[in-house]
Image 1 (cartoon, rainbow, N blue to C red):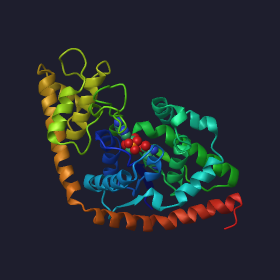
Image 2 (image 1 turned 90 degrees about the horizontal axis):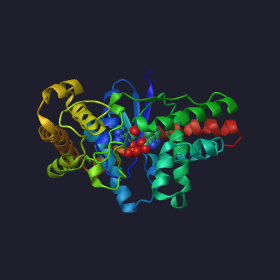
Image 3 (image 1 turned 90 degrees about the vertical axis):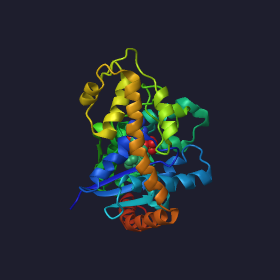
Image 4 (image 1 turned 180 degrees about the horizontal axis):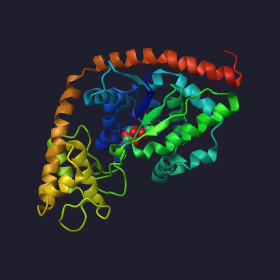
Length: 327
Ligand code: AMP
Ligand code: TRP
């Protein structure tokens, strides 16, 4: 029996290089070894306001990115979170065992409320990690391949699963986060102290997977660099380190080799080549996305939902019985 992995991305903004390098790139590799389920988490997306038509478009777009990146529907199951109502039901049940301070500690919640103020934040935003826990444990997931920024949420998932098991008897598999060097946070091009983010205010923060050649060149030209002119990979030069990471992860050339390649060549040579590396990666990806029709993608997502529905239903019934609901 293959071990099961589960992961998801929100259709809430432009997918960017961070999403690809931190998450999707790993999924593509893992699908051969694991029974893989990949979700488009639209219920997470609505924890901040979304335009309905945009949400619909982006949900399909995220699935297209999965497929174009090499997620193979013959090997992996793809579906839309909101089409399986068990996620919301299990979330509600887990809400009754999750503690308020546990959620208050979540860095992502703190970051997001700091940006917009608690007054205008939805309760759903606070509860976001519990829904994520439900997503994961509903399927007896063993591994959760995510970027490093999500590790804290997976830790909470473990806590909740263990707490439930202790209270009501063995029910859930305790999952583990799966991160590699490639799930290292990719930082913002305009500020290497913050991660590259879909919700960044400035478009100079990220390279979207949909950016055209001209945009990529402009953004990389404008990317902040550290003082000095040498290309060195070090924590003292976080902006440059981030650019080297992107270069390295997209070209499979190690940071050390990149350093060597640019000895006494200066930032502008390096940046020009980095732009080439990014464009050489994005152009075929964008072509594959353009070749996928909405109908085809919706068909794949529907088939995925059909496959996971019985698993989710069975697990939720077990949970309901254990807590004393009449089913
Ligand atoms: P999100 O964009 O928050 O829905 O994240 C989707 C996936 O991409 C998660 O596994 C994140 O950990 C990963 N991810 C998002 N931003 C970054 C980043 N800047 N660097 C690395 N991974 C990221
Ligand atoms: N919270 C994750 C993120 O923002 C997305 C997500 C939702 C997820 N449910 C999940 C990731 C389940 C892994 C497993 O990146």
